[in-house]
Image (cartoon, rainbow, N blue to C red; front, side, top):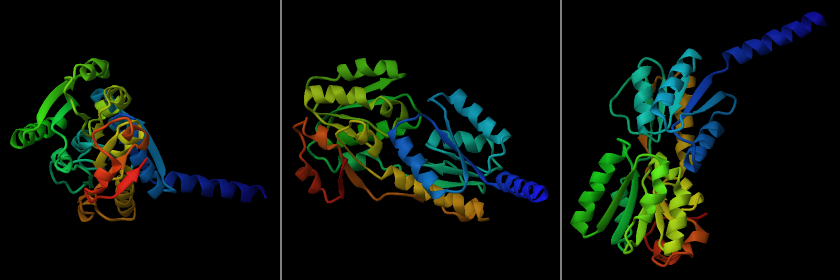
Amino acid sequence: MFIRLITIILISTQAFASEPKIGILVPLEHAAMQQITSGIKETLIGTNVIVQNAQADSNIQLSLIKQMNDQNIDIIMPIGSSACQMTIAHRPHKYTVCVAAIMDKETDYATGVNDEIPITASIAKLPKLRKIAVIYSASEKITPEIEELKKYAKEHGVLLHLSMIQTLIDLPSAVKMAPDYTEAFLILKDHLVVSGVNVIAAEAIKRMIPLIASDEGSVMNGATMAIGVKEKDIGIKAGEMANAILRGASPKDVPYQTIDALTIFVNKQNMLKQNLFSIDDLKKIGLPVVEL
């Protein structure tokens, strides 16, 4: 009996030791990140999944990547373009599955899924928007989107008020300084700003104008609406890629993909607290409408 017990313990220990380890690198915790992480975990049941939060700090992010290397993580799954690029740069010959990220160069050791829908593609579907206040951070990822937004506004007669923040401490004053003529607040897939979406939502409700976001999670946390993709679907697709690699596929044989099936997400409660759009207006766009 004793020998049998020892045998069972040894077999269990060996199984745990051989269990694949996945590291999810979250740049900053918020609702969209939670949805993406949930999708990954759902797809990787039976795998040891470790989630680390970089708290919007690039130094912490780099430290976590190095820590995951030391822990012999089989695959790191960084969420967002900057986290993806940093991960690949510091472990170029180990497996990476980038999540909701643009990969700036090809590598045999990385693949991923992108959900970057140009913000101009979203606002083009909302012709009522003529005077927009945009709150954004100093993130390098956001700069190209802001330039595209400026170009779009100039070509289509849209008046933009742009406010850049360095930290969340700057957010309340940036929101309050939006001109009185503002018809809507607009935010991008900008981790710092999204983490403070409740502050912008409160001001939007006070002014009876919509807060238009770029992700489902922000709508869950108070934004009026967003045109984007389902965050959990992004995580599920990335999890499927990681599973394929764990089963022996090379990342170079797992095609990098873009999810572009758009959905309109609506916060039913806050939709009633603005007077620019109705749900019927949104249904006329021709995209699926999900009321949260």
